[in-house]
Amino acid sequence: MPEKAIIDYIKKSIATGYSPEQIRNTLITAGYSPHEVDVLIRSAIYKRKSPKKLIWIAAILIAITLTVIGLLLLVSQKEEPPNIKLTAIQTQIPKGQALLLKTQIINPTETTTQARLEYMILAPNGPKLMSKKKIVTISNYLTEIPEQLTPNIPPGKYTLKLTTKIGQYTLTKEIYFEITAAATHEKPTIITTPTNQRMKKSESQKECIGGCDDYNACTTDWCEEGKCEHEPIIPCCGNKICEQEENEDNCPIDCKKKKTIPKHNKKIQKTADLAVMDCERIATVTEKDKCFENAAKEYLISNICSKISQETTRDSCYMNFALNYEDFTVCKKISNKWTKRSCESLAKMSAMSET
Image 1 (cartoon, rainbow, N blue to C red):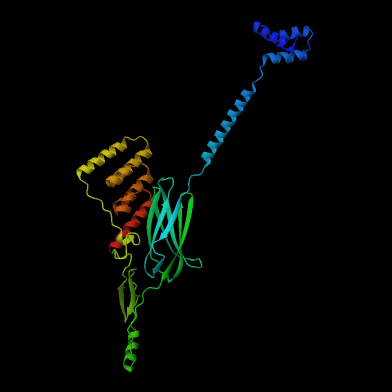
Image 2 (cartoon, rainbow, N blue to C red; image 1 turned 30 degrees about the vertical axis):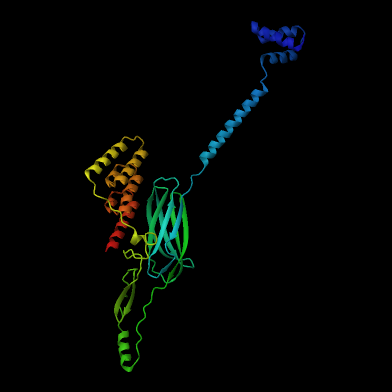
């Protein structure tokens, strides 16, 4: 019997209820070898898989593998790190004048966090001559921080190094600047005679005890015959007068217009209350806090900040009023001790600049 006929016989026998063992015994009795019978039974029972199906299965497995690898790569990608940019308004300043700086912090994640900044003035051979530290809260993609340093160092070329720590990142920037000699004042020439030689000797003993530095970067100080003289430097950035050659870009400390919080009428207060009620309906904590922060900024009401549940967002909300409107009454409401100290330092600097 041909092989195909035997396989058909096996299939029909199985369909009618015979077991493979019964069919095997029958075929062996008919003269077929046990090995040959076993091969034919397997061929009849187990249908060979189609090559096309195998190709499809392989393609699906490859697609699944590539998808998993892609997801793993996507998850393992690191977030874009922050960056900083440091700019000096002027790279050459007379001795005693302030060095005005602008720091830009790029925060790609736009999450509220703190940045610790340290400004260091380094001598040409490396030693640190001056250092100033501050802590700021950042939440936007771009944050601009003005800074003013008044280095009490002799004329020469120096390096300003800024080190900024934001979370796990430590960023550094360096710029170079030069301090030039301050304006000198010529004393009148005295013709030497026997009489004025005696006067010169007595006048030379008239010194200004304690020195004549009035700690004002906008004056030139010297001692004249035992008396301190102070001559204003005009123009001078830092004298609270926006002079002809100054503007908001090269001297923001003198020319930047101070923002004020207007008095709120009942209509504005009612609108703000409605905005707060809308925020309270939001279920997600982060979105709700952001809504309160935006409402506080829009209606210029610092009390709305108290409704924010997350500490960093709440402190950032209060610092907005201290930085942009010089409302330092919010300092005592800040929870984080470093942010509170930063706010209190701003208040002291503002009070000193008004005296």
